[in-house]
Length: 233
Image (cartoon, rainbow, N blue to C red; front, side, top):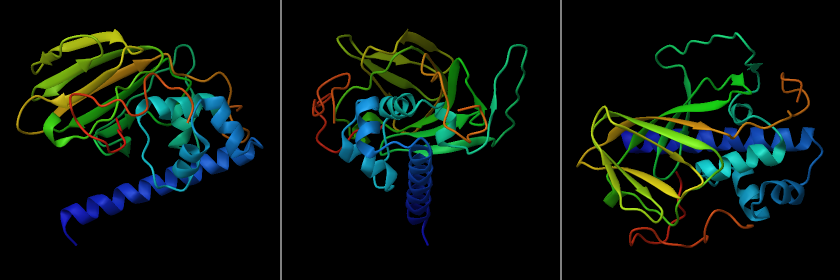
């Protein structure tokens, strides 16, 4: 089996596991697909596709799902976790993360078993903009920090000129402003991203922690002249 086939198989398996986890949380809460859709602001068909493992969601919709279910985002990746408490300390060693792949991005979700964090830290791999397929800007509550670890990165912000960051440079912004990332070079770029403001107040029963509707912009708004496949950040 070639590298591309192995990568595709692994991505599909992760989507299926994520969908199964989402379905279990929903059923433990006694919620229907329609109720989750209403609470999260997503279409019933979108929630259904995610549960069936046929759709890899963008970060903003991912956080909407967690908020609608009343769980921490980490609970969608891990069945067991501990709440981060005052005075707590956690260390992530090399390779300790949960992979979340979408059409455009590969996220390494750090500290997935540490729930109720004030921030969501992730490593990411970006391809050149020309090879990515965007349909809309991503937007979600909170604030966002991006640091370029390797390569060069173009950050496209809604109603602003693109910002190009070199290795070692960073940007901090209100993540309610529509945004997209891409490598500014011919090869991949590596980034560290930290998002705040997406933690949920309660948790699903038995989770170990005590617990298409309007989005940020038009569903089919093209970005930078790119066409039509569903955008996944």
